[in-house]
Image (cartoon, rainbow, N blue to C red; front, side, top):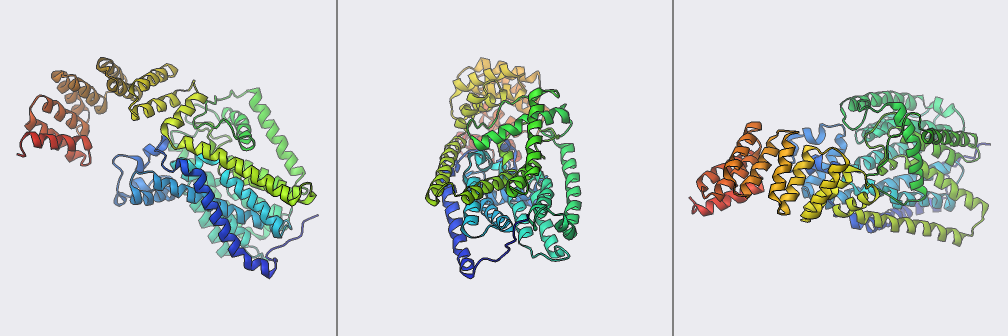
Length: 577
């Protein structure tokens, strides 16, 4: 039997209290979120942050536009430009915006859930409590710490926010015999486009509209889908365009797609295990890791196939029980649809990433709401006991999220934690070594670089960074040896200039000038070549020549601090001449 519809039929007194309840809910969400995420608000740039326009030492101005809006996610980059104009590369404002956007997502999720619950016949306090608790789980669940605390993961938050906006507008439109109006369709499509221009995962959102109409308007009928032909037809066309856009992105991506030697079958079987790891993190959020060591499965891996089989059985059960548990059934199908862009057949270099749960978690919220409604209907717990249990769950999640945010608040803590949990993976070792070097722990940094070199064939970047740590630890000869090893892999201006710098610091002037000449030949526009050469001339007392070199460096890179300091020293040595 289809549940009764209850669209907009609350009492007048309840309606007048909605704005106050809304304001209190928003205020509480913001206060709690900032308290929980406060340890991460000054967290450093990590991973992809360092390659974004705001993380580059030569961050471009808006006038150039290309680096800010010319990429695959222009709305995301525009939000970063806003932060860059506020605070440059300082991370505090970026983290504040991430937390505010996360709060907006949770508030939007509350109202979408509230509307879907109304479609199932739930009204009044029970509906608001179920929607509020589910939104609170979204706000405080520790599995979202990576999405919120990692600046670049704003893409997940923005995409989810625009997607929820589209779902909210879809759910609040007036039902008509001929379906949604073109105005409604236009607004929904614009919001979907905004979601897609924030992150490509939004290509899965059309499934959410089909599920919502089938399950809830009024329930288990294809008539709403047929009536809303304008919406679903245009969204379907948009979905095709979105898939074409995603295919174009994948054709040039170096971290996703089919050009990395991993076949779709192998990746799908691997995800048969990964999705169960995600679900375990939702139910039992422990062992979180920014860089998990999760190996690719073989195409015939029995555990992977068993995982896929179990997912298929759960899906069949959800469909069978759709009339008894409409929210949970729809939620499970929505979860699978929204996680498909990252956990199906399109290989991604990192097979596991906690932030990928942020978007599909919307489906799991419907399951949470179904559980709350079921407990309330049975009356197995009194009102006080139910409120206490929900408060305890949210408090536990908040505590765990705050602890995880503290890890994200320090580069050293983040990579120490990752190495403890992935001791045999090279990248966490490399990142920990870099964090140690940045904190002037040069000896431990050199040891971590050495350990990283044992876990995978060392790249030229690893060898140069290792050399810098060795030089910082007073081991100049070993540093030179590592740079020379790097030159057997790559003969770049940066590596030659680094070799010249090491020779110059040790007083080997001829070797230093020879290496710097090779750096200039490799790339005449690499500014540090001239800054290092200025230091060599200055150490030899040739301040006039040193000044010329520092000026050349600043002509190429006006903000170069080493060249600016060197020029000031040269000017002082020359008596201001």
